[in-house]
Image (tube, rainbow, N blue to C red; front, side):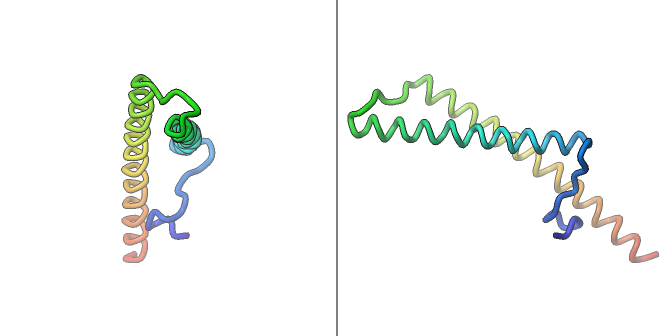
Length: 96
């Protein structure tokens, strides 16, 4: 993969961004489980086997999705900045 285009990993273990990315992935995994449980509960309620998710459940899941979306946008901007920086360095090095 090409690090200059942002399609590879520009992260180094021990770097703050590395730990931040690992946390984002861990949070995505957790959110995926939460969404899966919500959907299964909804389907069970639809089939008459369970009580539907409460409005508090809806609000909590919605808030978590928003927060995860913000974390993903922050991650994307940071990765783009690193990618742009590397592309500029590579461009300067080719012109030397």
